[in-house]
Image 1 (tube, one colour):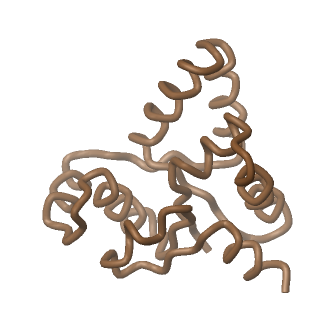
Image 2 (cartoon, one colour; image 1 turned 90 degrees about the vertical axis):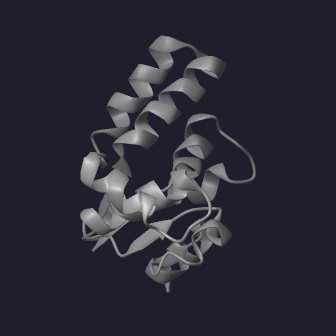
Length: 137
C-alpha cells in the first residue's frame, strides 16, 4: 500500500509541533511494522527544508531530510505532474500537485491534517489519527 504524506505531517515531527507531533511520529512507527510505502512529493522536500532551516538552521534541516529519505520515497514533480495538477478541480494549486503526485506513485491515499483541502481529489484522505486507527485496531 502506498501513501502520500503531506508536508504538514513532516513539519509536525521536524518542528515538534504539539499536539500533532505524537500522531505524526506514530505514522512512521506503523510504517516499520506494516508493508506500506510512504511517499513525499519532491516539491514538499524543498518546502520542508526551507521551513526547518528558518527555525533550526541549515545543518539540522539537511540532517533531518537525510534521515527522512531513509524511510520515505521521493516522488517526482515533472511537467506531467504540473499539467495534471493544472487540470485538477482543487482550488489550491499546491494541493493539486500533491494529488497528481499521489496518483503518479499509485498512492490512492493521502495522510494530512488538512483533509478539507483534498475533499474533491477523488482520493482517500486520512488524518494521522484515522491512519493510526486503521493500523492499530
